[in-house]
Length: 101
Image (cartoon, rainbow, N blue to C red; front, top):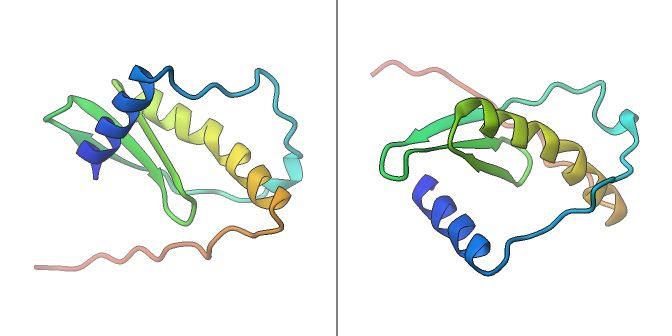
């Protein structure tokens, strides 16, 4: 997944990238009372960190773990606002289980 994400982002950058408005109005009520889990994985091939948010279609790619988490955190309210505008709600939260092997 990380390699695919990195390739996709590299392609987007090569084509001029995607620009977001400087100021996006997003009501705090959409995300202030919910804690979201951010999963960070390191891809040694690209030497990038990939942060995903289970339950939301968010993938952030960065050169440092801190930057990947920051990008994912910034994307959450944007994603929730877009869902609200389309009349949709976030997918139910993912369930995390530990297994012994």
